[in-house]
Amino acid sequence: MYKTFSIKEKLSLFMRILMPILITQVGIYLMNFFDVVMSGQVSANDLAGVAIGSSVWIPILTGVNGIMLALSPIVAQLLGGDKRDEIPSVVKQGIYLAITISIIIFVIGAFILKPGLGYLAIDPSVENVAYYYLVALGFGMIPLFVFNLLRCFIDALGQTKISMFVILIALPLNVFFNYLFIFGNWGVPALGGIGAGVASAITYLCTALITMFILQRMHPFRAFNIFSNWVRPSLTAFKEQLKIGVPIGVTIFFETSIFAAVTLFISAYNTETIAAHQAAMNYATIFYMVPLAIAMALTIAVGFEVGAKRYQDAKVYSQIGISSGFLFAILAGIFIFVFREEASKLYSQDPGVISLTQQFLIYAIFFQLSDGFGTPIQGALRGYKDVNVTLGIAFVSFWVIGLPSGILIANFTNLGPFGYWMGLIIGLGAGAIALISRLINQLKIYSAKKS
Image (cartoon, rainbow, N blue to C red; front, side, top):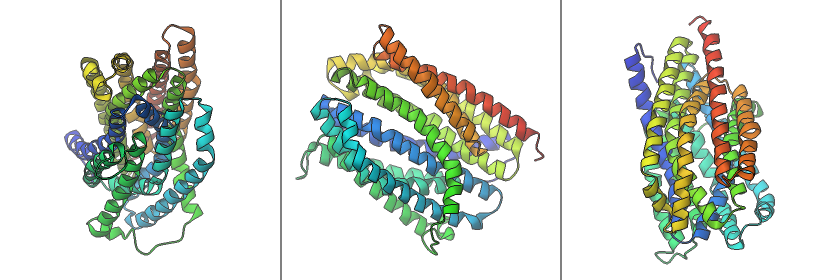
């Protein structure tokens, strides 16, 4: 990151930060995409099992990663405020925190996972796939969360191409391991959907090791001595990161867990409906990576300018990011509509699944508009370290408005499972409206401050 003086310079720098983040996010999500697609080639039960497993895993993954995301505005503001000497200690404490949280989740999961899945009363073969898929993923949690913590440090320095490089290595590794463990090749037993979890856990480990090697050997990371001169874990440092990270994590958890809740409600329908729902959600989420990447880039850019007390520059970055997100949302909606049949056939050869997937994708178009507008706003607010009100907005829009609306529409109209998607659209729309109001308020507050 560096100071810019014109809108043209800001747009250029923003795109230089954004594009590697976007490629990184797409690469990360493509791992899940290939898990689902490749599992679906085994059987509908394997696809449904991975769908159920993902519905449990993704809220945990994104919620904890939200806590890790606190490092981005912290480091960005330290960098903007010329306090580089404080950065290494913050990163080291973040690593301790990532490991601690991973262990806690693993222990909790060991006690509640099996009973929780049993409560869903799903087909035993689907439950078996979901359970062991999650068990396999659990063994990759520590390297995964450490990688995400380190990635936040790398990106906050503006070195987003490095994260992109790591993921571009990890993605083909994940596909290769899927090829081995899902289908049983090169003497490896065929594990079906369970093999996708094994492949992902191994990939997480490889990704963390590659990232640690880069930070130890390459400029400018080497100068920070992240893996030397270790300090003891500090509860005070944990508290500082958690103060920002927990609201971010819980906000993301509220958003992703409502999608997981919808998947669990839809598990009451037949296997074809579950598979089609997951296929449509998986495909639509690929497009969500763009507003998510814009949000992450905004957090870095806005945080850097706020740290340097250049509040007008922070406002301009916010405007650039939000406009870009909304424009993309319109284009994504058109693309999904035009190619919905071709997309459906990527996931299954079952005519029933293909037909249902196309219907779900029509509803997914409206996700794009709300996400393209609301998600970048969240990123801008994180740059200001404004996270608590966003948490409240997420809870009300998704769990007070969105999910209850979906339940009512699904059970008291003829839309059936599509009613839950209508509830999601209503919740996302309500959240986007509330978020823009909050950002406008923040911009007024900071505009009154002396730059």
